[in-house]
Image (cartoon, rainbow, N blue to C red; front, top):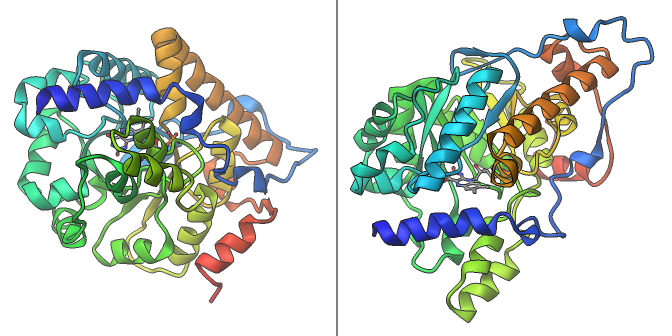
Length: 359
Ligand SMILES: Cc1cc2nc3c(=O)[nH]c(=O)nc-3n(C[C@H](O)[C@H](O)[C@H](O)COP(=O)(O)O)c2cc1C
């Protein structure tokens, strides 16, 4: 089991370096969000306040390095380095799926990022494992790495393409509801690159989920990654067919924000990951109404290309571009950016309107 999982995790880290994992046909549709330029910003760049809140913590920028890896020495180094950068920049960080740790406790050092301490640290487990192993297992994972909460990931498309992947996706909503009861805003429910649409957003909110990472299509395609690993012609063909499956990230944000807009009661936060590739994309996600944006692939690629320094430079570049975008729309802070009204180009407005028609 350990060798299998280790091999798979290593293969994933190698495969995501290949260009095809972002298939040409997928598009997060951030290019359809045009921020409105303000020729008279009347702001100092240094005064732009990027701070944001998630799960009860103040971050210095509205960003998260979302869950990716663990389980091997190489993965452990990636986790520790990226967590250190997240701490330096005051942003949130999540480790990858900790399923393997439930059976192989000796792998803890590959998930434990201490002494790094980002302002918010999240464990990670798949929804199907939550069903099988129960709420206490998820709580134990949080404790094991001294995390603040856990991200429960949804990945049915990837599982269906994966040889030996899960085929039973029942019971997840109930299991998530039980965990949400315990964790409140310390629980994130996230997709892994196919998107969370408005109906699922509604179902999650009804079960008291307070933080949702829509993780839409347009970035890393896990159906494509599994296609590249496929052992059978059938799995390969399904992976190919589904390689651009999913809801574009910008459409997910727009639709989720429509669902949330009229809601009274506790605030639900939206994280936008999936194809976020620059600080400008972060600004576009926030202008659509997201609270935070998340990077996966750009961070691991930078790290595998040039180690911690390259990953740090990538993050600095993104934060600088976000700050520049805020100034250029005349937004003094993240709230002002979220309140700005970008011009939306087709096909994004059609996607949003058809996913979640206006009331
Ligand atoms: C190498 C790698 C491994 C990943 N492993 C996990 C994981 O274990 N758990 C999870 O929730 N998401 C995982 N993801 C998905 C990301 O968290 C994210 O949802 C997705 O990749 C979309 O973001 P991106 O386009 O910036 O890569 C992984 C992504 C990458 C690139």
